[in-house]
Length: 192
Image (cartoon, rainbow, N blue to C red; front, side, top):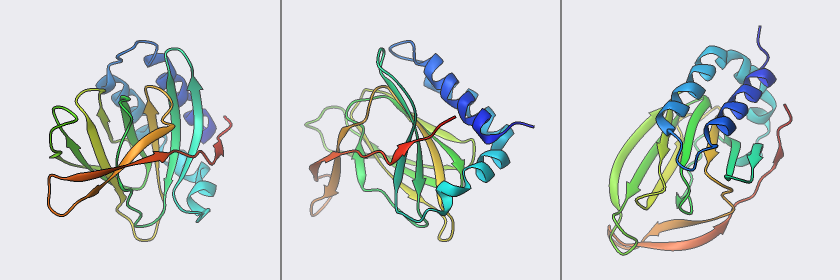
């Protein structure tokens, strides 16, 4: 039987291996990561129970990082009912994959930074399901934990370190949004 640490190590190692290219195949990477989560969902949910039970709000935990080419692998804890502000990813490509619980991801894009944001759609992610975005065109999304009782956990793989990014607030009527600079915080490392 696989332990959750073995599963997390496999997820991290696969993400780092795929991202040796500047523009990795995000669909293939998502499928490979999702297959591990589908296979090991119970072990991951049980093994990461401490993250689910912390009740300290939204948290980001570092699972792995590499400098060249840049990639970071994070586990995020989403408290019951928590909804992130609409935010971008500072031009990085990324994958978001559910490890435990269910997340709604509402996304927008625009052709250039001078164009208005256009709603692209919604995805609902359960364990092993993923959504991804490339570096082009400009992209933002809002994520929401669909449970009112349980903390959701997600795996995020980014094409670099997501240190600085922007959140967006809608001004009066769509399509106008106010951009607010943000600094990402990491709660700590996850050792595997």
